[in-house]
Length: 177
Figure 1: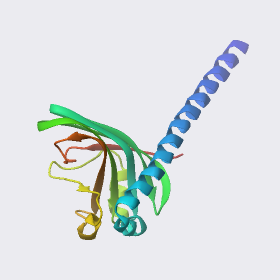
Figure 2 (figure 1 turned 60 degrees about the horizontal axis):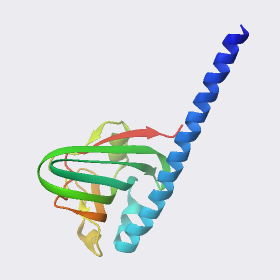
Figure 3 (figure 1 turned 30 degrees about the vertical axis):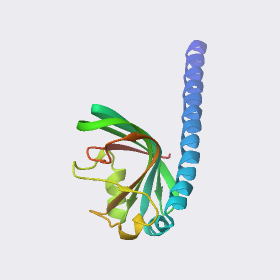
């Protein structure tokens, strides 16, 4: 009986330490997302209207992209509803086509309505192959519009890559408990 209790306590401690480690990673991503938001607003102050008026948004502060004919991208981000963080998200992309190079970008997805945000929160959200991002530069937000309740902005951080599409991206959402 004592052995079973020790095993159970050990398992609970491991689970607890695992949750703390995950929480630390989430906190780091959240801090990066906060800095990414400031960077985006500094680049194009017009994005403020999207941050204020959207039902929600997801910020991916460090998306890595790379490829030579076959390419991919991945990153982790924070999902916000009415300006407050509600969970974490991950993105993955694999594609084939004319592309070369590597790049790090900040990506933010704005959800115009509660319905658009709920669709994302249901998990396994995907962009169609035609989807593209608006490159965040001074003034570009002025003419940007939602499409199916979603608009995406991307800002290159480093590197050079001949590909600005977001088509085929797949997202997973994990709410805070």
